[in-house]
Picture 1 (cartoon, one colour):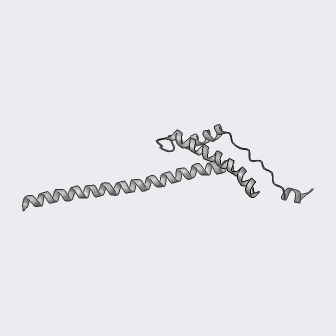
Picture 2 (picture 1 turned 135 degrees about the vertical axis):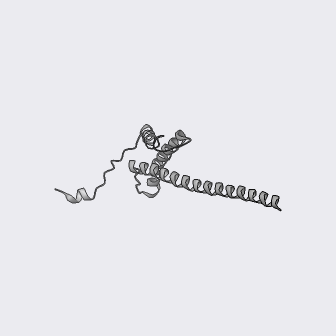
Picture 3 (picture 1 turned 30 degrees about the horizontal axis):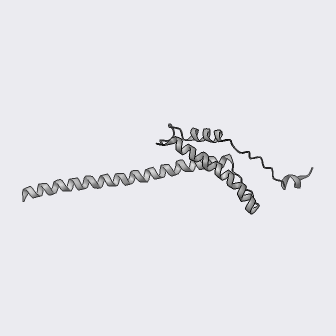
Length: 122
């Protein structure tokens, strides 16, 4: 009966996730079958800590600027997906550099053998 009331109101229905839920989600998306990590528990703790700190900073943001910033479950999933994407990109670039380095070493070894052969011939 009052469409302007519905259109102009904001309902804050984003509830904060408990630490255990954040950790469980990070463990699910960063499990060993999906992604290879050396220090998995540390990375999971960092993801949880980052999300909790951002949630705390939203309160400060509201106090200083009187504007809301919502930290949603989607933003946490985006954090984890961004980490996975960045990790894949960096691993690919490092593997490319390692491949170039190994190719250069093999070329140097081949050149060294050719120099030895030429020295014997001379």
